[in-house]
Length: 528
Ligand SMILES: [Zn+2]
Image (tube, rainbow, N blue to C red):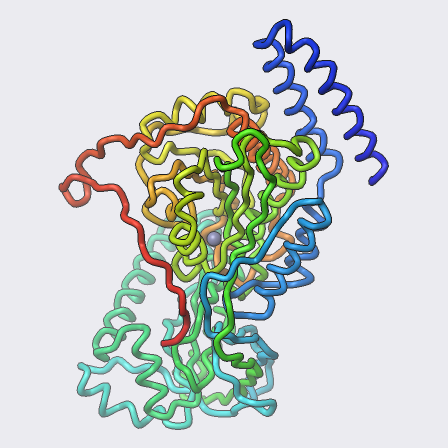
């Protein structure tokens, strides 16, 4: 592989000289030839020497999920630096804040009576540890109390018990399965019943006078042994796994099937007991970083083409599609550019952001810390909505985005470009992912928005967001697209316009829409 690469570099160099010679005579043709030679080299490198599978394996299987404040997040930061160094690209970890440090440990949940069964579930992020023996206790279901006073009177009942605070789902089959096999009547009835039950559960929680968050603290303070949740994601086998609120007792998420089992046994008076063992570690406050890599510009080193993808993840799975795939896309694009286009006109930067999941914190901090870069961003491309090939690109409300994005896209091979639906001038994104941090600062930043592959149900923040969900051909498509757009943006003789459209009336509020304002990064996180 190494030999082939060297050979290719040499032949590119030769082409370069030949083309340069003609350039003196016919420069428009030169530009066209140069573009098409370079672009086909990008496609060839991405197709024949793809590193995506290897990178995915090392990052997702080897290091694992990348929750802010965990040693794995730091390990991933260091891994990226080493990868870039191996490709001859300068990279650094830039500290922007600190976070409550925590390390996931063994988490094991077993039903002990009326029969033994190991249950599918896991501790939530930042969950307290129980020690190696764990805690064995009975279960109590959050009751339907009349009001907050009745709740206070009931609270002593939780002492020494695990409290179930999620609804018991009436079906573990996703809707598409009902639609395929159920009668129309039974499907409609199930949906109606489920909607009523969901609403009743919402009211049950609100009648306690607590929110879903403060409820955990109230139960903890009343001496509960732990808290059981089940955040079903409406597909077979998927739960969303977020963070615990309670600080001293275990908070676990249990898969729909096992949560239903415990709920029904408790409800029917069988009084199951379970053992929960969580062995995570608190690590105090730890520094948080963005990993920034750079290929220095030769003609306009102080203008920046920026690639962007958050590096952190939730930790129920391995963050494969949120945002492993965005990360891989940008790393692979950088690797390819360094080989095919090592001396860009403008500086090419990549930002692998920390703590996007808690509120775009890494990218917001970067925008605050580097006004000189933000001011001179030619363009930024962010990818963060799953493994699919890019199918949507909005102009984010920039009046002339059509001109330059259209100009660059025209050079992208048809099989990649033809799938992309563009929207110009579009409206500015106020959040959702890191491009919004830059849009809020007036920089031309765009989201390479991908096809869903059931992202929302099956992988986004779920326990099933793992290597096997990656569709590598689509990620390769995106790495090629990103590398070509970065090349075109770097070469463009014109600096991009930042002129904004006048926004119309927001149909939801009836008021004139405004451009999103910059939001401050949380620099000290997880403290309350
Ligand atoms: Zn994400």
